[in-house]
Image (tube, rainbow, N blue to C red):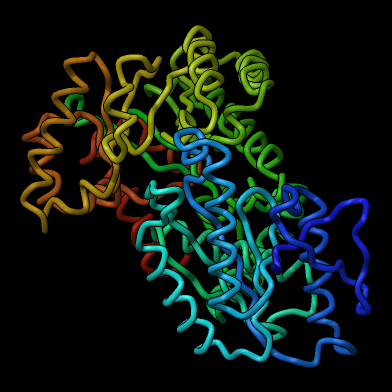
Length: 465
């Protein structure tokens, strides 16, 4: 069998790589040892002196295997693994390298992309059927990432990254799917690299552009709140918004520097508006789930409020729904601490996931922000209007504010007003604004602020902002 394992008796082959032994006598390659062996094989394949052949690298992940182990037991799953590995070896004619947990690598030498994708489709078709161990059937879905070599890199570490990207894309598509690392993924990878490289420089040189999305209160007929928004200009890429660069900052470890910079700017803005006597409810800062779950996050918020003497209710923190799946207990504890400090808490994308609805009774939030997809579908999907009415009614019955974002047309506005949605945000009312412009319109009605808004919209059309 080609499932490699390493123990004290293992000997190296003539090519310097670990020799193959049967998986049935041990647990197989685990952790760093497994990854090291895979990298060693990749390095050999990508080395111009030894890896003359072209081929396709394959990474597989067995989905829900931990759950199968809990239900059917260790012995059952060990036999299932042996069946799966034996099948993969027979189907591909290649050794199967086990990495961490239930992740596997197969290197298809002298194989074209079309041949590899045809082979993978056959493998996925097999995984659509049940596996039988000792008379008991089970489904064991798989995701597969593919990357041709040496097309995109001669580095084993980069090849591992590319396979991870392809595997992640397959996982997003659902069970028993595959994705090929191609020129588009390569372009995305290079773009992410450029953004990550420029981020630190943008922070140090204060090149992050700060703008605000104003929110209109249809009951008081005034702009009463705003949401902090960031973007940066990167040579060769142009303007890059926070929705793109914040996930990259999370992956690169730069999210603390980026968002604490943003938090300080938001605090200074709130202090300025208060000193100028502006009437407003709050200024909101969308916060990364990764940052929100940091142990010292509440300490930073407390220090900010003390530094800028921010009264209760004027600073709002906007959290994503996924924070409750990433760190359940920490998330609830942080919410309660922030609420006690007088921070307004906004739950973003309300209605887009089951947890935001089923768990809303237990969340210490003050405001719900409706998923903009509902707003965009108002004029194309007749089912959207009653859903929005239901969400607005639910929020009001619970004593919560609700914000509709992405309002762009009079038709959307009419449905939202009929539903009784008090707070609305979008280009219909105003584009994103600089801090000075925001200060001009906060507390003003739409008619009075119209000249300022039209001026900003005209700038946007001319590409000046």
